[in-house]
Amino acid sequence: MKGVRAKVTKALQTGTRLDCVDNSGAKVLQIIAVKGYRGVKNRYPRAGVADMVVATVKKGRPEIKKQIVKAVVVRQRKEYRRPSGMRIKFEDNAAVIVDEKGILKASEIRGPVAREAVERFSTIASAATMIV
Image 1 (spheres, rainbow, N blue to C red):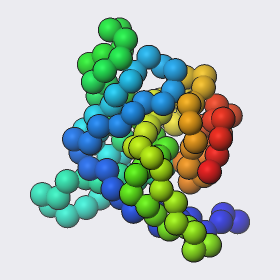
Image 2 (tube, rainbow, N blue to C red):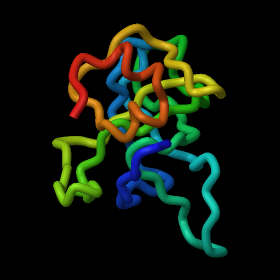
Image 3 (cartoon, rainbow, N blue to C red):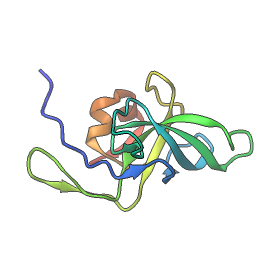
Image 4 (cartoon, one colour):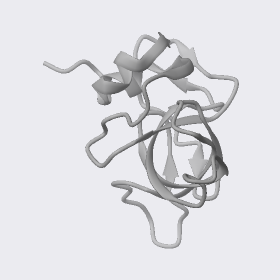
């Protein structure tokens, strides 16, 4: 049986810039779409922690710059509530680059990672140094 998921506040919309916190060579990502988003007509797609997004690399090594990649949001500034009643928020908005199946492309993740992202994408857990 799967545990009760937190209702994560969707705080990141298309156009938002995120820090890329893995060692893939990218530094800054910009969200261009949210995978699986179903919303109201003419409303900007929004994402939160543990959502997969389609992003473009804005800053980083020349060979990865300007590429379109899939990424998973691992931190967000806007606080959200867990079923236990605890409220969680981070210092920055951050994501890690993954492939279509959600497998991490890099070998390490810098900084804390939200537990919701680890529960949904298990390969992130092996590379994370700290899970909050």
